[in-house]
Length: 258
Image (cartoon, rainbow, N blue to C red; front, side, top):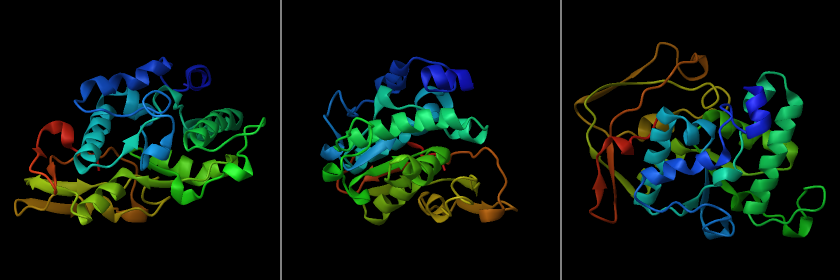
């Protein structure tokens, strides 16, 4: 895996062009920085898709679902496409700090450039072109990507406002830009991923953003919040619509992963 990260920038050693393959499976346009738009000043959010989100079949379902919800809600966003590399989280956790530094610096320079900042010969942001953190918004579906970009990239010169996709979905629901339309039947049990819950204290948006239903019961795991253990979460089935339009979507591709 580490060799694949070093050579190809992802755990599977796949070509970077494959990060764009999921775009062929959606019926709306998703701008790619450097291809469809010059930089991120034209959109509100950069959607950091991540390695699994772009390359792994199960994770791609969440990617497509979240992108569709952003499209329905009218949120301007773009992706980095092939310019994305693994954040380096796995390399750092496994003790390969030089590889983390290499991947991280590559991503930070790509991100700073994409946000319209100028870099000097050492890859650092020219002071006159530096933008405030609030002008560099990133949304991520992967808790590990969120943690690394938000908490560790500042060490490398990348200071961004990073949120989890469930936080943005909850914000869109609260503002009436997304409205749940398909009730959930059955029992939903929420698992708090370690890097979302214990490390970043993000707990409530996932539970609040699911469509309410009399036929749906929500249960907590025995160990919750900062006492949660690592496990694989399951996605609830739900449908959403744009509050300002009659268009709605209820198929499986619209399920945001908790």
